[in-house]
Amino acid sequence: MAQGTCAIPGCTNGGKLLRGWCRSHHRRWKLYGDPLAPIRAVRTPKEILAKLRHGAFPDTDDCVILEPTTATRVVVRLNGKDMTASRAAWILAHGDPGPLHVLHRCNGGSGEHGCINTRHLYVGTRTENALDAVRAGRIAGQKLDASDVREIRSLAAHGVPIARLAAQFSVHRSNIEQILAGRRWKHVL
Image (cartoon, rainbow, N blue to C red; front, side, top):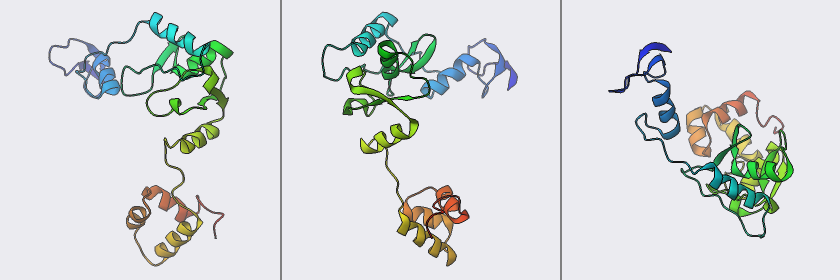
């Protein structure tokens, strides 16, 4: 980090520069992809807290959706910490689950909108969260099976380049490298 003045014309902020920008412009770049992006409007805390309370203590079995202000899930500040809205609703209703994740039983928790109805939420491990995401179709599951791994090893032994194997099996080249080095799929002979 260099010392100096921000590279944005008209900005007089100095100090430590990140990518040539002051902290304010660097933060805008990190959040919005543009150092000149306007700070996006955020709902007032009272509106958010009212909706969170409605999700934490629902009077319905329907999904309670807190619409995001950007293209990502809603992140709220509760007790001085940033967290997803579903986790905040869970904390209001049941207390902090600690290292456990707050998971969704409904499809309202998938995609960019997260259901905050605590009747639809439960706590689980990181692994359970990943499995739920695969089951709900939010992320792809395992792409390779044992027969694919055997074929990868055979083709690599016959001189097929790693890049070609990665393209053929639609995985990242690091996956192929780890299979060939015996760090992944070592149980498959």
